[in-house]
Image (cartoon, rainbow, N blue to C red; front, top):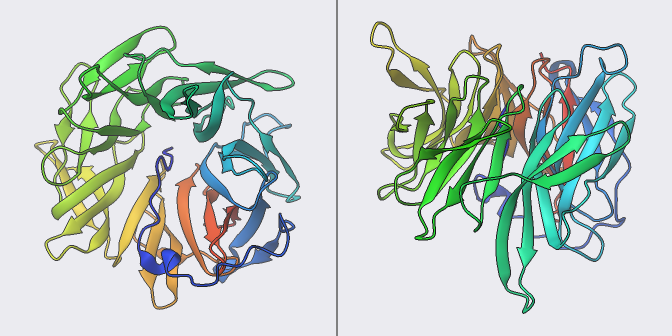
Length: 366
């Protein structure tokens, strides 16, 4: 599954909220309520502050103890400090939530968790500051689960300057980006022992997702617009086709289907899916028909989630492989669906009118 690394709230609907009052309580109570067609939304709350994000989630383990428990990762701001990587363990049957912040690397001033696998290993980044207060950049971070806690460690990447961990696969392999001394960002693939340079285009590059075969998808800033790309093991990364404007590949499943977005010739963002055409095996792009939209994730069933702007503002959506689309319920004002697991549990954020937002979990989505 993918994650919402450096997520940008899609359009102006959220930024246009004008009520800037602080929330009446630091943390709202958990809220589960039915939505359209039986979909339920659970407010995950925060871990000490007023805002939180749900960026990624795993598929519950098949053991009896873990069957109903889904692990969501993201970040939560603190009452008197910057956001920290956070987790929510949710029993999808009882709606019980266990949550907390992930331990920090010594010297880190803030952090975020972006992705998690079935073994409950989390990846993300930690931010550091110089003694004079200026930014010292971020470092790719992995949190590994023991019987009692997660232990953080820095992931060995290509260079010592700023780097990040964008995604982790079922085998624990990690994809991310790391800049050279000259400032060129390069893809990397870490197999748990060795870190391999997977190339770049000279500018910025973001690795959004990685399969068990080591195939990476993401976005590069090459040319006048950002472009979606795919990177196979042992090959130079390749750009994916677009609809005429900027594009980004946000997720890839084990069948090679890719979810993301592309601006069309008119400059409108469209949710898209890339699939291989036969007999050439080259990727072709498909417009999913949602206006002002982005697809953020796709699972191995071909189910996709994302966000679009409709008559009532920005909403999360769920889409089956065959094209049936559901609008996901919200808590207050707007929502974005960032990630979906193999059971079609979905995580993201729901926005309140005073411009703060909480991580949420949607269940009974299928």
